[in-house]
Length: 386
Image (cartoon, rainbow, N blue to C red; front, side, top):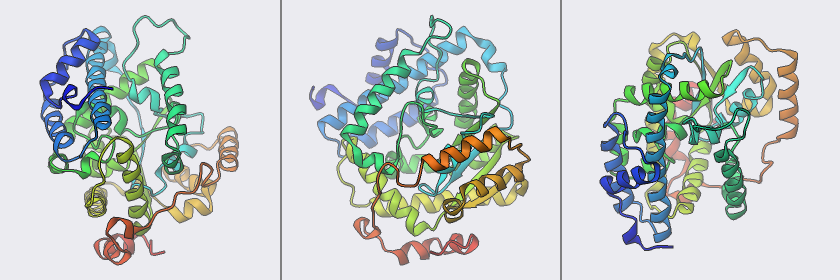
């Protein structure tokens, strides 16, 4: 398995490993090195990684750097990619655990939608020499890997089901910038959290636009459908990079959302070899509060027609009615085919299909009154009190 001494979180060591793996050496804009250095420090000192965790996270960073190298190589080989346009994408965002995934998956059933899939977000670079019509071997490998992961970690599957072909969050390809939330738990730790909150995010969203062009060049879509709760923290930068985008905002009682997200981050971080974090509850609450404060401040100074609000309870009670209101608001056509496949999806994917996710605030040093006091303005604004 290897010892911790073999997996050193040093920027130059990681860069050399990625160069060796790929045979490439152009990482593009050197801006990424700062975020990588802070992330290395966080993983090395704060995360409390086991030997297994060091190995997993070290290899993940090398893989991300390798992907970054292959992306730059892909643009070098195919400069025409830069000329593509991502027209009128729809972005979903909101509190973590507020129904963004359920809304995303349902909207993604429309044949006119082009959701970002997990495997292609992980491997956005074109595989040179792949025969037309052939399956990308990275796709098959990821399907096999996720089948094994679901067997090994059924608790996380109850929280968030994922497969190579499930629509997935923008944070997956954005990780190559080393300026985003990564797997979620990193931004809850120091010093990476402070680094992230202090970023000007315009550059990473411009980078993300170019990565989407690369994916679209390989597998074009009519209307891109994209999603991440983390977009709340960079909503001004997102709107700058995608000026004709439409934004769906999911809302849920933060008492429920914060508790659920604490459980999700605890389960996932432990699976990645991190030690238990006693300050997790407060870190999650501040992440959610900061995201809402920043995101809704941007929303309030932009054209309100670009945004549509949907409450978690309303979506659960009537998902098709909620989707209908989204389509009406943005003037999207609801075809008979789209409505049919969406209704089939609702029938075949009841809430809790992959198991019940149980959680409580007290396990994370919080109580409902703390959350309500911190986010009273948000609860009142969207009438979210349970």
